[in-house]
Length: 245
Ligand code: UDP
Image (tube, rainbow, N blue to C red; front, side, top):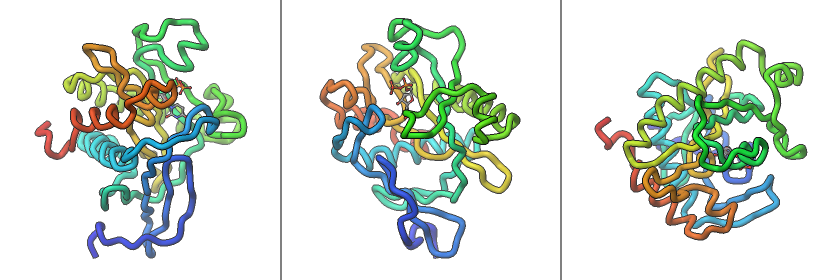
């Protein structure tokens, strides 16, 4: 049976933008991408039409790019418009944020104007806990909370910076500035792999010439044109396999 014909089993988990399904007898899951959009820890709810389709395709493209550059991910294949086949990894309960330019919560916390370039990429860790709004944690706090071992956190930070080193120039060539992004990691057979998704839901992309926001901030901040912005990112980035890189 080819990977594309794997059967969807019971739903294991439903998140704000995705569902995770078990598959028949193998160490694989199917991730289903929805159009539902939320912000501010679920307080703002809405839909971005076709977002699930674009995020599935974009995530597949970015995961393939990372794999081709030697970074392991949970990605196996894209099955259809909204479904992605992935390895069933144990998600490490940390959100790992990499920033190249001050924006969002960093700009708010530090008082730096949004758009201020950072001398060096910054990595932040937040603990995945909706009830407490995913609080920022230090490495030591993450370790003492049992989220991961110290060596795992060092590895995760290294991987996150490696992902930035791959994505940043790739996107800039497509006239997209990678302002910041969030990664999640999973444990698979003693290996740590990039998991979850990489999309305009989880990254800030600004047009490198005009500064126009082409990401979920269009929804968060009621700027309008969210669907068009997601489409624009897909039109520029497209399928990594076809890009000839
Ligand atoms: N992010 C995310 N999920 C979260 C929080 C943040 O994908 O639960 C992404 C967000 O899209 C941005 C980056 O992480 O690309 C940094 O977000 P920030 O901390 O500035 O948070 P926000 O401004 O969304 O509160």
